[in-house]
Each structure stands twice: as C-alpha cells, then as structure tokens.
Length: 331
Ligand SMILES: [Zn+2]
Ligand SMILES: [Zn+2]
Ligand SMILES: [Zn+2]
Ligand SMILES: [Zn+2]
Image (cartoon, rainbow, N blue to C red; front, top):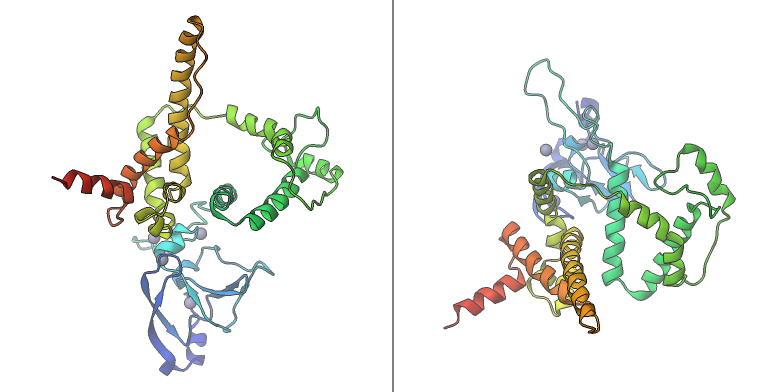
C-alpha cells in the first residue's frame, strides 16, 4: 500500500541495500531499507535540502506535502539525503502510521484523530521560543535584522485606530480588511525598545490577564513532566553547555526556555510578595525600601532546573549536580 509494485520493479533489485544513516535530529544511527540513495517516492526537498523520513510516516500524515517553493517532492532526484528517524519524526510534528490491531477495524490516523489541529499554535510557540534562543545567543547583526523583520510583520497586524479594541486575540475574519489600512512599513534600523513596548504592551497585557487558573495540579504536573521529557532533543543539542559550560550564563542559557520561564516566574512572584511586606514594614519605620537584587532569581532557577534535568536525563552529566556531588565526596 505504500509503494506501488510497478515502481519497485522498475528499479534494479541489485541496488537494494540496507543503509546506515545518522538521524540529523538525534544523531542516532538508523537503518533505511532502500534502493539507491533513498526512497524515491517518499523523498522531499525542503528548502532545497533533501529530506528522508520513514516511508511509513507518509502513508496518511501530511507533515511533508507539496508546498512550493518551500517543499517539493524529489521525484527520484535524491542527493545528500538528510534522514530523520521515527522518534524524531513524531517529535517534530509528523506521525507514523500504525495498523489497526483488530481486523476490519480502520486504523486511527493523525487525520482521523485530528492530531494536526494545533499545528498553527504550536508553530507559533516554536517560533516564539526560537526567537528567545536567538535573543540569548545569536550574533548582533542577525538579531538586529530579525527584530526589524518581526517588528514590521507584527506592526502590520496592529489595529490602526488607537481607540480600536481589536487585537490579535479578538480579531475575527472580517477584521482582516483592516490590515490593509496599515501601510507596509519598511525600516532600516530597529525601533527603540520603548517604541516596541509602547506599541504592543496593550496586547501583551491582555494576554497576561487571561492567564488560566489551574485547578488540577496533578494534571498540571503530568503535563509539565511530559514537556520536560519531550525537551530531550533540545537538551541534547545543548549537551556541551549543560555538561561543561564556560560561564554560568552559558549554562543558564542552555536550559529549556519553558523551565526557566516557569521557575523564574514562580521565584519572582515569591520575591515580589516578600519584598512588598518587607517594604511595608520599612516604610513604617521610615527606612528606604529594599530593591530587587537581580541575579538572585537566576541563581535559584539555575539550581532547581539543574536538579530536574539530571533527574530527567541521567545520561547527561549536568554540571551543577556533578560539582555538588564531587564536593560531598571530599573528605
Ligand atoms: Zn532521530
Ligand atoms: Zn518510500
Ligand atoms: Zn500527521
Ligand atoms: Zn508511534
């Protein structure tokens, strides 16, 4: 059902070999049963790179589909394939087809289970995290150019009338015409931080207010644990910074974004509460208020995150727990 038999016959069987290839995502060796360089039916060019994912992942799933000029079928022209293993394929948003175990029962697929329903949201979130990563590590010239382009794009979606309450979250289909009123602005230099914040603060705040009230903390814990578990790809990519960082900043930067955000949010909240009580007392006694010491949150977040990472990924020699362990072994 995957490969039409005519196709198989056209290729010389002598070419059929089992190939060992490294998965470009996790770097593990995987076997590819293929003729020639890769499967010609299920090979694609994504941004001019030849991508080879498990054929069984393309039976129903449309993770790879014709989307010119970004993604095109390779039509047998397979050059320097970039292979992706089953596990990584699913982690990256594709789906492997599993036959139904029960005879006569249709197999559930990503289409029947609607597994791609949140792809847009997840794509945006991924790009958001990517931007944070770039912000922390990228080179300044690239960062500047990205900021300009992103700002131009977002500005385009900003409602023109200042009194308008339309925003990203509330806009409906008919507001898309409003966008046209906003002429496309092209910038040479990035706007100042003040300009950016002033323009977008309202939308940003709006989102903050809608924060969900969490009732089921056990469920939340499970979701959180899952997210941590799924971050192994991301963590493995930063292995060297996590195991042997040159600076604390590098070490901190290598942590998954969601962990840092979660714990720094929690610790900041605690500090703010403590601070306001403390300052209330100080005011009573006519003492100057205490101010937040930056860096304190980062220290605590670094500690907690280190412990969690070494728990989740014992194959990693996470730097801080290693150092602490070696200290405790000293006489
Ligand atoms: Zn892989
Ligand atoms: Zn194939
Ligand atoms: Zn799918
Ligand atoms: Zn699977």
